[in-house]
View 1: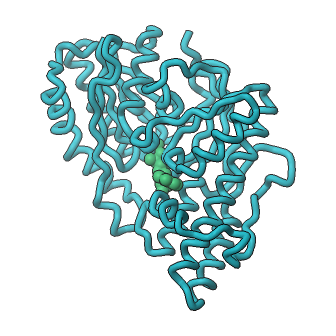
View 2 (view 1 turned 45 degrees about the vertical axis):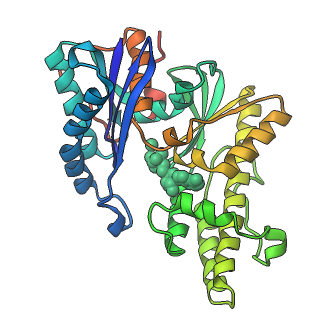
View 3 (view 1 turned 180 degrees about the horizontal axis):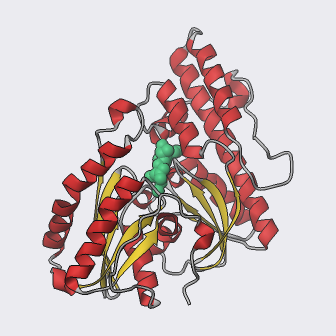
Length: 345
Ligand code: KG4
Ligand code: ZN
């Protein structure tokens, strides 16, 4: 079976083909450039841009991979959570195409897509594991005893990790979203113990629980940034702050990930979402879990951020389990708690 995946939940227009026999056949992602000048995603502009690009993109993917429409055995589209107008573009398109072809369609939960993304490259990854979802909109620890069963253990009470990176990066003049640029800048930062930057807290690690709160850390980073920028070495100061912030954020995530594993009696962590591309997080979490006889799994860099390969794959998994349906309508949900999903069987 070949499944076409469609992703339009935010500001990436993406499509991909996943097949039982060949795995991932191809994928396309277009990151909308129109939002950069606003410093954040403008929902209505996102919807219109998806409308503009989705059909030609799917056509191009089919042409380049040599797959013909009639070979498709199902269509998987992101049904939520996300921006409602943006979701509607992909779900109407996906359900419409499936209806026209007479094949089943399935509405995929965007975060389930992220959780399953590492399996695109490593089929040996199997539950039970703790999923750590770290993106521009989410910071969550989720126990995954089996695919489809997601028990949220803790999440951020305020800013998401990616949001903190993006806001501080913006203040540093690194553009939007600047998480990756901030991580790059951190490489030339000096160790916090020798840089003279005042210490950053590891929020909420000194008390029990798996909740996160990053807004205080963000405010502190902004304050210290203003101080170093007014000093005599602003360039070096910015890099030092980037490094200190990255270390504090990653430390906090690693401490809570280990705590989550202990709480549910599991060994492995699957990291998902854009911040999963962060190399320092990859190193630190991998090393910490290795010492405990566990393992940290990450998607390949390109599949950390939003993409349709993960949607095609998650849709394929559910279609294989007989969960698709011939189209009688379509779903799009701006809010969709992860723990409302049904297990595979
Ligand atoms: O999952 P994603 O593509 O979109 C959603 O937010 O749903 O994640 C994007 C987030 C942005 O905040 C971006 O700055 C962050 O991931 N990001 C990074 C890195 N690459 C992307 N943050 C830290 N280090 C990186 N290397
Ligand atoms: Zn995402």
